[in-house]
Image (cartoon, rainbow, N blue to C red; front, side):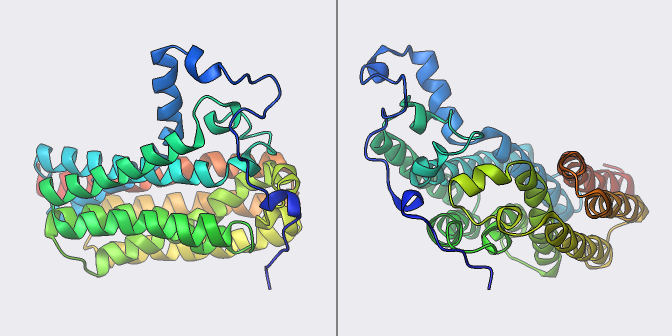
Amino acid sequence: MGVARLSPRSRTRVAEPNTSPGISPARHSSRNPLRSVRAYVSLTKPRIIELLLVTTVPTMVVADRGIPSVWLMVATVVGGTLAAGGANAINMYVDRDIDRLMERTRNRPLVTGEIAPVRALVFAIVLEALAFIWLWGFVNLLSAVLAVSATAFYVFVYTLWLKRTSSRNIIIGGAAGAVPVLVGWAAVTNSLDWAPLVLFGVIFYWTPPHFWALAIRYRDDYRAASVPMLPAVASTRTTAVRMIGYTVVLWGLSLLFSAVGEMGLVYFVSAVVLGAVFLYYAVQVLRTQATASAMRLFSYSITYITLLFAAMVVDQVVRTGV
């Protein structure tokens, strides 16, 4: 159930980076250094990294029951950025064949020929190696293992296996995006506990409605690339019902964290209000089944996760008087 067969087109790998219309073989040598740097940076998907790191530092504050040392926060963020950037670059390397078939991704550097595939892969592997060495050397071994394990899960479980074969792809594969909270907690305590595991659950259940909302907008792209993202293989109604289910669980976990994480009134009230608004937007998608409603939910989902984790920081600052 939830498995879609792939067309031969989606399984075909692109051997050369310069097969897009208008891309000449000389493009690699003709670009200027700044353009090259921008292309490599885009491989790491900076906007996704920003969202992941939004969850890391607040988790560190909660784990510390105050503000951790600036150096520890910087070291953890740098290591997390390297690990996430490497994972995203490998994802682009693997998906370069289907990226050229999707309107949203056809301008990525491996599709346009800005970067050769082998260089992108080497770049990604180097980032992962640096991430592990950096976190082990400047944070701790547990954080390093967690960060690189998340990359392995994202690449092998999501990108190489589930993304092209199952409509449950983002449900299971999205777990990789929840690991930064574990890394943040481990960076401070060098251990794990129930509190970070509940936060892991928060991100895990937040990911499907967040991503499906965007996928509703780009369902034709996924169909063109034979990627069985849920909105591409199921009706908007079915997708919306599942989004509501995940949102309800998300709301419950965010409230559970108030007790497990020993949070105060600032966080609790924020979790109640933010979760209620999230559920409202999810219900609106079901009611209207319109792309506009889905995109409003997508936009709010980013605001939600940012404000929820910001509330954790404010809660700790207010309670400890730091």
